[in-house]
Length: 269
Image 1 (cartoon, rainbow, N blue to C red):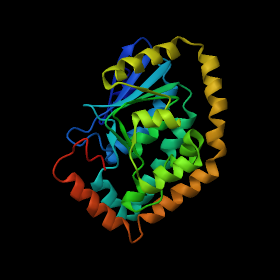
Image 2 (image 1 turned 30 degrees about the horizontal axis):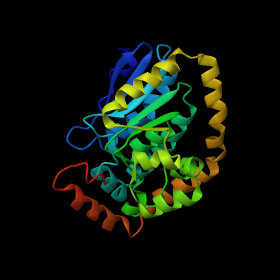
Image 3 (image 1 turned 135 degrees about the vertical axis):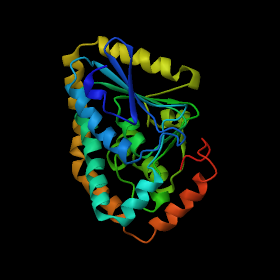
Image 4 (image 1 turned 90 degrees about the vertical axis):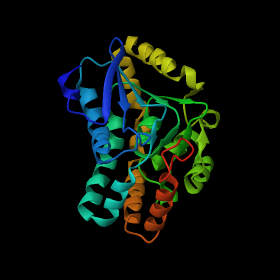
């Protein structure tokens, strides 16, 4: 394992195939929620991967049958109370999206269980997104009491259209993996038992392809995302403005009640 990955704490790395790096989000006992450590690491890792000459393709997944259950509620609470934390996470959220969009290495996501929040950013901005049939994809922002930001305003309308985007983002309705494939939100849906093998199969094909052809094809296609930059910046600003608004504390309390008994796949938010 390259030394550049040795300092990561919440992200684990292995090589399931030649020149294929697999990144696993891991926050034990919390369905891989993104605390301040994981959030920062999800920002930085794409720069490291982009610069790593040993990587030809990358897979992003979650540990223990879950992709990611969204933002850690202690971090969310700190954002409502401390301006420095809020502005730091705002910058990280912006950099996370742009680092994913600008990473030249082809990416595959393997989503199962809850796929929410910062983890979902990587799941849906991956070049090839694969979801288990019973995955639960939820944006989650409006349930917390803030505007749908992060990646949502950029990629959801491009993937599944404006009408479906408004329905799912405004109502926070969960999208199963099967439905996500049907509406075009993800590239592919497979049975849970096939998810990780399929992600490796596709990553191996990408790793075996022409690096130049894939890199510049990705760059050209991602210009659709770059063109939405002003929309993204606006949505992100409105999202983080909401953390100082009147609805967040109520939303935070509601989510704490749902999460208090235990972190289960039935309570991803």
